[in-house]
Length: 322
Image 1 (cartoon, rainbow, N blue to C red):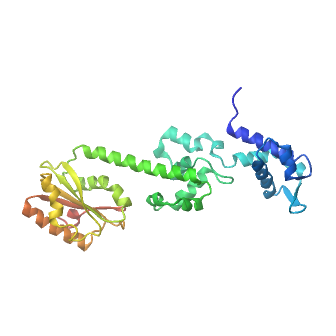
Image 2 (cartoon, helix red, strand yellow):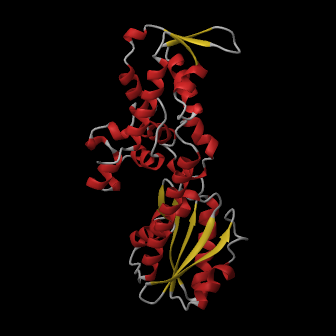
Image 3 (cartoon, one colour):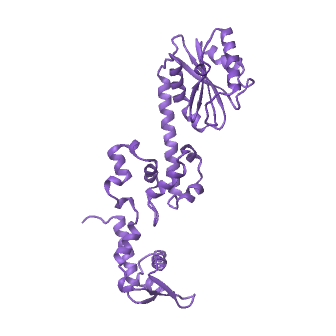
């Protein structure tokens, strides 16, 4: 004989309590607990209070020993009410094609909406709200700023949905961090393969991939130099400074020191704009001209300066029409 599922066991437990309560028109909580002696008293209390909150019971008697009286007991459908409490809005009761896990297995994770991915991480909903509905609430809140979800506190997500308890919150944060690590590992693998920069378009694509996470998450400007060999293949990438971009932070000697050490023939400069707007500032342009003059003096070709941001990337070479 097949072992009963958790849901089937819960149905039986609820049915035992509800049927005990239905034994008479009027009863005390203690009487139901006594009739369900093998059941957890806390669950008995919860079920009876749910019946009352749904309007099927009314309170009577003294406060220290209240009595519950049925309202229309003969019209009350116990199995229907129990089913609603156990299965209401549960993804396991949805058609197979509508269940996020089944859709992921059939079509891959990329085919799922953000809300569905969150629903898989949340796993279990709460009464009146499924995991998918909880995922919709969170996805809608971060629809225009998904990257900010990584910084969301437990209380912030809990306010959006009661389904996000400690376990669900940990699973969401773990999923975000795992995605970050996979992305970093992918980028690292690409960096290990020689990348040849033939044009500003190549430089843009390289910087978009190499500094994409930085562009999305960094709160400060990071200035980097990409060193290239004589075939314009990437040798290495070095972070020169972190902070507001100005001429004191990106002195030529600091920028070209790693390039000389790498015996680089050419370099690409890159920095991010935490504001999200890649449009170059006057300071960006001034710093670039100063470094270009220095590069000519030491015999290193400055191919381009790429600004990366959440809303795009810009080549200063193309921006200035050079």
